[in-house]
Length: 229
Image 1 (tube, rainbow, N blue to C red):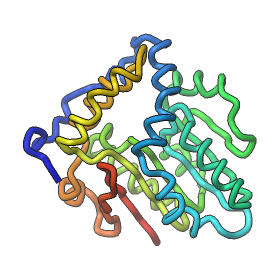
Image 2 (cartoon, helix red, strand yellow; image 1 turned 120 degrees about the vertical axis):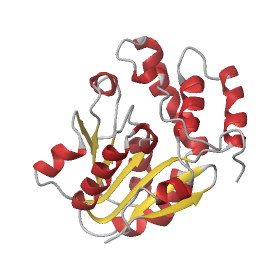
Image 3 (tube, rainbow, N blue to C red; image 1 turned 90 degrees about the horizontal axis):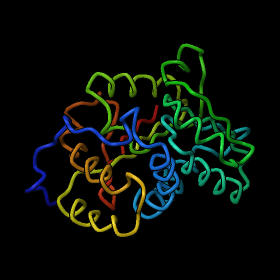
Image 4 (spheres, rainbow, N blue to C red; image 1 turned 120 degrees about the horizontal axis):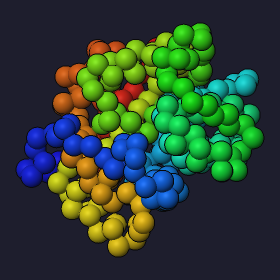
């Protein structure tokens, strides 16, 4: 693990996507291009095979994605589950109305339902799912917000909660910088570099989470936060 230049996390930084007045066309392009980023480096195929799939066998399995963004991750999971013969019912929630507007323009699989909501909203409604996930969410949260998310996850999930996020690393930062040559007219590269600087090292996360949660480092430059009842 190489963290000389980025040995200190910088939570004061903000991303262009978080600006409510940011360019909508660039924002929608960012949602669209996230598909390629997640396929290339987020490691969800491995997470699905090792962690999600064993928990989803059974009658009418359910999955919740918290902070679904442009919906590319749940679309991938829906495809994998269909290939595996699983009648998976997916709920995707997102508090940002701009993401909901983008999602309404997409042709998502019929087994995905999305809505503007937070995890706390679903807790208040008494909802429950076999598996709860999130992607690239942890580094956006304050310490209090992280605690709330993890608490909500243990209430909402009956079998597994897993949050997949970036792990801060000098090599990750240097390696991601050239993507500006590929991802144009979006915030992918600029926000991606900011996200790396805002993200956690494994030991930093371990100091913040309840003892029933585990931090599992994963290639490429990822942290998994995992809870199993």
